[in-house]
Length: 324
Image (cartoon, rainbow, N blue to C red):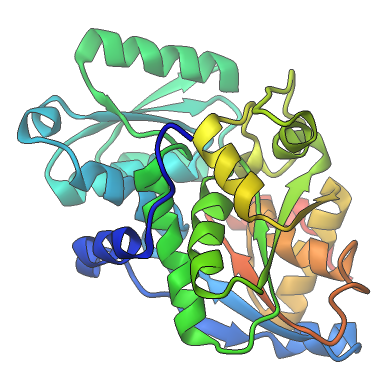
């Protein structure tokens, strides 16, 4: 990597700088999932959907905006997102005393679009992910706004690394951590921190079949793009991988698994019935992997599921989840 992975001191320092603007989210026992599995697996959940803005994304966005000069803050920031990163960037901009103009994809849930506007951001819509990245580049050129990337770079990795540090502080006997993968910013930063603290903990990434960018990149040995994102988990729909987060994943992630949209829908329903939580598809990915492709290999171990976020309205949840 042209830029080295954050050291533990970098991650701890970044977390302290975020202060009360970021919460230390709870790690809780998921007894209902354990009962359903009935194979001796101990399951804990890192509840990042209780984070400010409803997802882990606020950690990285704030870490980036904290680093800006006064001149950069006066110019404002921009971002591109299906929803969660846009909301987080809008929140971080307001918390840091600057302003955000964000590009959101046309298929974004209206609930998320309004949540972004409620944080004070200007919202620009684009037809798809590729068009959105083109539009945000234009905003950078025309307005001089600083681009807060949704998943790439050492500051993002320092922010998401704080989740790994918290998990290691909250539990001593972890065998595996399961993390949803979109662009790789969450699992890249988290795995880097965990491997520095607990090198024997297995870090497992989960992608959706219709957005398997990191799978293809790891197979190719370099970051690659996919032609089309096709999944209900729009939060995981990164159309390409990038060098920094790719290298973090290649160096620190033990294995990757794939789940289908059908498995996401059933996991959403299962989390409602066993934990009484209504989560978005991306947040259900770790659960879908545990009860699906990872069920046998992780039997009897202590597994942490990272519940990455849940910005979803009830009509959408009711439409997507399969209960029973």
